[in-house]
Length: 170
Image (cartoon, rainbow, N blue to C red; front, side, top):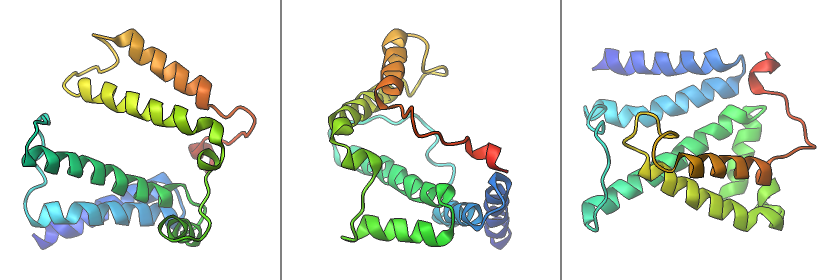
């Protein structure tokens, strides 16, 4: 088991280093290794491979909470992936969890608040209904899915603030 833990950390740290030569990418890999560690130690890393179904019972509430917490933890790790330094990432997280004047370009711009919530809801419903398909964008309602994507790009696109693609920075 010690070898599995060590190898898992090596794989995640190397994948972080592969994404970029900055400590933030190493931290991102380390955080993802920490996320994977409980599953590895409890030998449950292959227990969630089937399609998720939700009913109105306690087990479905647990599955829904697991989905939401996985999303939140992934977003937390992405802060390190996108930050310029470890200090910036830690400060950003500190601003999220305290009252230290956290602001985001989408939260302070009231124009996008309702559109973002509506699109997030639509994307979650669409993704949930397509979870069993091999090619989710094709098939039933494919035109609706494509229209949602185009609408999101047009409505939420930032056209004046040019940011270079992350992998071109190396």
